[in-house]
Length: 188
Image (cartoon, rainbow, N blue to C red; front, side, top):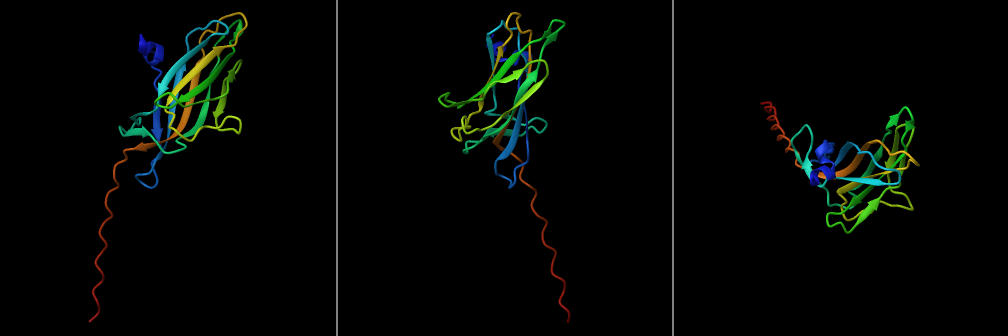
């Protein structure tokens, strides 16, 4: 039951890719992509689904990653979705994200992104009025979809979230440099 409430039972787990660090051993910029179709919701009601990017495996590589503890680890990204439509019209949904620290004491919440007749995408970004806190790390994410229809229930919006963040990735060590060639023999 708990996994179903968190969205995992419907395959709503993020996939994570990372850019190779430069220099090796430094933090990498990673991208968590989360796609989930929300269940039908009555007008005015909200449905939260959670996902975590605190640690895991980089897709396609098998390498381990940990959300960086360095200040400014949450970089930004995008969020939005594709509306659910019937012959009667398309639903109107508002999606927002809340990022929380591991101890759940610190958080950052985006504004609402309206998904109506057409797909929508909004930026996760710091603004003067709503800056992304630089500390502590915020690896726990709650996507909240609110049904903004006036009469009919919302039948299930497909949400898409891409979170850009710094992570420590266990990249393999580069091979050692080949030895220098011997100096040419000195002339007699």
